[in-house]
Image (cartoon, rainbow, N blue to C red):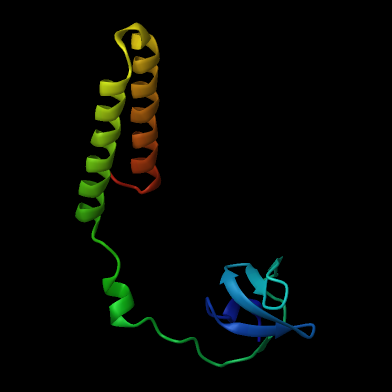
Length: 117
């Protein structure tokens, strides 16, 4: 079978070594743990024909986006409050720079998670 047909998480053999597909073009060597890039057309032999399905319990372990954002906002606010309380007035410039850096990091986090507010 072609590597492109292998399902994510499926075990397969290539040149006498066992791998698990871990990405669209990547397999992890089961003996060494090293990652190997594969061409989509590489011929591999499946070790198991099917991938175990994701169970409903595993799917329910993921938090919804509102819960994650509420938790993040509490974390972010507590960080800002701690900085504000613990940095002296003499360090006002440094405090402002920290606040700016934290706000930029927050915006990057939101962008990475594709969250718009």
